[in-house]
Image (cartoon, rainbow, N blue to C red; front, side, top):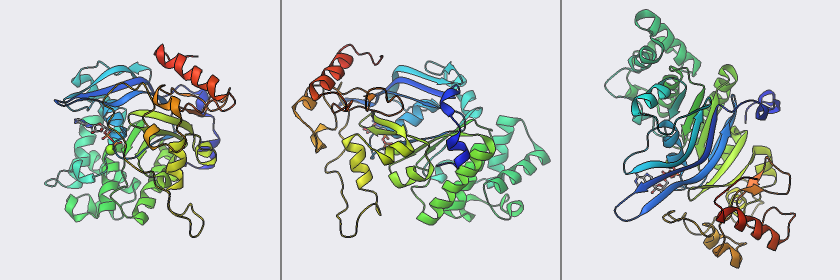
Length: 359
Ligand code: ADP
Ligand code: MG
């Protein structure tokens, strides 16, 4: 989580830098139609860190790639809006999308080697990014590359700028990739599991670095991970994803303090260290299902300890966890919790059959 000053500032009154509305990204394979991202909505405000958390296969990377205009064939964005600084990106040409990637949104992937070319020095790769995105070349670019390496905490940057990726450790490589991302002076940085391949000490250092860069540059960060412990370290707000849908949204404080969806509760109980001595680590049995049909039911029901008959029949939509709680929503038939079960189910049913999500 960012420092007190950032969390205390009320971001919700500012215009979001990114606003996703009812986004659906679908893969048309020979075998089936996979609704990898199935009608998600969320906002990111300037200077805010929004976490996307969920098990493997829940649609986190496809969400990131949709925002970057990098959905691979046979996939396509089928519905919804992705507004960056108020402008809808859905429907843009590849050329227009490339411009946005270089100028406003940058991405850091799990494996730094996917972003680094082994045959060029780290410095030359950062300089290339500076040339493309900021028009810098020659000595000015070299100096800026060194200062970016310093900004991401690489010691002896003047020497390391001339080294190759294989001469860097895993943690240093990920720092170099972050420096490359900063070379396009982004307002939004999308991080897809950037610390998953690193050991815990290095992971903590990278999270600390991201927090510092955010403070200095007022960066908005979208941080993807399967690890609730990492979310606790870094996120201001959290979206929990399951089988292509966002099933709970809250501030990090509320999500960890009063998790509402049975899936979120399960994820939190499986964080190592969150247990009394001797208590068994609770893991959720089974896997995330492939979302290969329109949901007319709850996709989590087969694994849910609290499922009841209606969960097989009614698709839960995002509702406030209790009436009036706009900043904490969940897609579960047990909510709003101040309504009777029958009333709550009726609310979900009326909203999902009309396809609307407005009230
Ligand atoms: P996560 O990042 O949460 O682990 P992904 O976003 O990578 O999950 O994947 C979500 C779903 O989309 C999965 O069911 C996955 O199989 C499917 N998917 C992702 N990429 C492709 C692709 N290129 N072709 C077909 N299906 C895909
Ligand atoms: Mg992924």
